[in-house]
Length: 143
Image 1 (cartoon, rainbow, N blue to C red):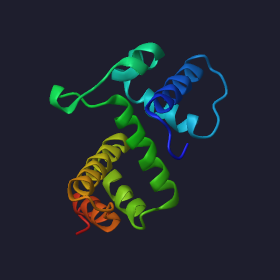
Image 2 (spheres, one colour):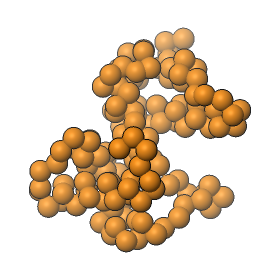
Image 3 (tube, one colour):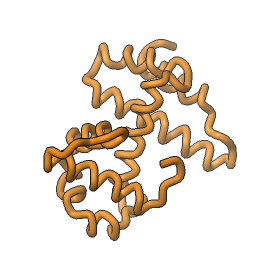
Image 4 (cartoon, rainbow, N blue to C red):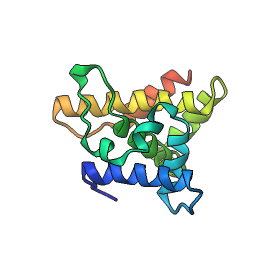
């Protein structure tokens, strides 16, 4: 899924969660998606009702984080860590894990990734991967 639609992303997470609950085999990214979902009990009811998941809107002005954006960012971070891309992200993450649990460390990366994406969108530029890693390294006390 390189450029999935909004509904495809939502269906993917709901399907992975249902398979997890039904103890059905998970394949590929479903394994990680179900694990991420399991660590977010606040989303379980939503993931268990695909129709609601497809139709609900979350807006920043409403003060709500889109759960599917949050889960997708977790998924992106897992991929980044698995291939150490951008270079240095894995070492910074491991350093964070010496001070906090894995999920909290992932949330530090989420915050840095979200800020980096926001900055690129605001400036109309490409995402600055080095600035992203630098921000994580600062949070990890490596800079």
